[in-house]
Image (tube, rainbow, N blue to C red):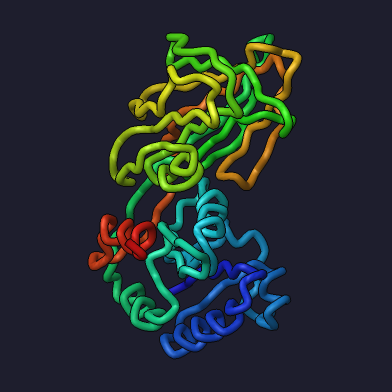
Length: 283
């Protein structure tokens, strides 16, 4: 068995968790792989490899919060390896392993006692005025078109498929998957969607109108967003981690990709239980 491990460097408990993982898999005679730079930083040079996302692995472990797991999923977009998150963040909607249950869950992983939820990526594109299309990248949570100048509101046009829906002044638009419905979209007033629902949610950010609300659309629909006032500037973010400036005459297109991320889940972890625990634990 080969396991890829991606530790978050800034979490203070990472070293302890990593040592526990190494000891567990050493007893199982399984091989663990780390990105070479991280292996060197943690004194585990014998586990370091280059281009880890291209190395064969049975599954990958993400040590961090949901942001760490999102980045790993994007790294594996072209070589789908299922990823299991060990929660070292604050919420951890996607991470199914808590630190106090680490060894028990690793035992389940070794026994194959888990399921894989295959979740579709969003794909972002920019269409130039001459009609050429440029691929921006994949996102598992959301693709956000937002103002490039933090002090200004912008005028945006929203089209779904070939139908212009609305032009309005706002800070931007979020196109979120069900997985990403509990992230930025939720903070902007969007609905919570079960990750297994087949749909996308369009959520305006601080729209200066009462006439637009979050909208759930089909996974087959294609979203186009453009600047109405081309004197302004916008940027596109993928999962809040990759940012690209966009020319005022460009059109940003977002659609569901056939590429999927494999998220490892355990049968005794219920989505609605997770919502209750993570969002409403103090209620």
